[in-house]
Amino acid sequence: MSSHSLRYFMGIDGLLAIVFGLLVVILPTDTAAIAAAIIGVMMVASGLFKIVHAIKNTALTGWNRTGASLLGFIYILAGLIIFINMHIASVSLFMVVGLMVGIAWLFEGVIQLSVVSRLADHQAWLTFSAVLHIVAGILLMASPLFGGALLWMWLGVSLIVLGVYRLLMFFRF
Image 1 (cartoon, one colour):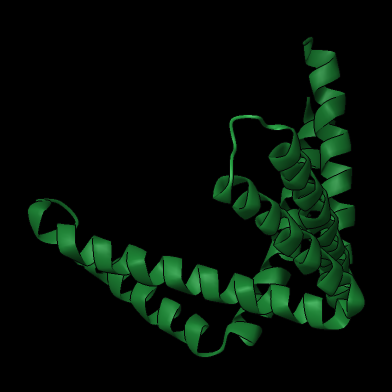
Image 2: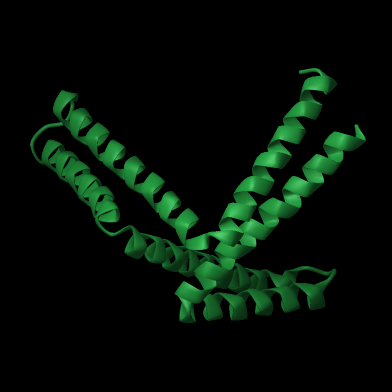
């Protein structure tokens, strides 16, 4: 790839990041509903593929085939439930994101605390980071809807900042 085409790629990437970031910041529930719809389509498609795979795969027999088919139907049902009420789906998306990030941060903090004594350098900063992760993880798990919405807005702002940076790189080179 030449530097000229890379430059245009960075410019287009920057513009798209700014547009999507602005959409997330200005219309957070609408963009969350779109993200939930994409997840719903993916779940229905995945369920259909699982069912077809269970039917066509000759290696699956008995309960394996039944279980794979049942799993496919569960995926399809979950995908259809998303489409029944998009508002609840988008709120659920915020909550799941908040809970998952909260759990991840909590575990990251605990793991950091468990290894900080083995490291010679920067123990104070690692301990501070670990405690910060644990507290932030607990706060996100205590209020996953607010935390998920906050993380969604953070995503939008991050996309805008990244897009501006990419555009600056586009105009500099």
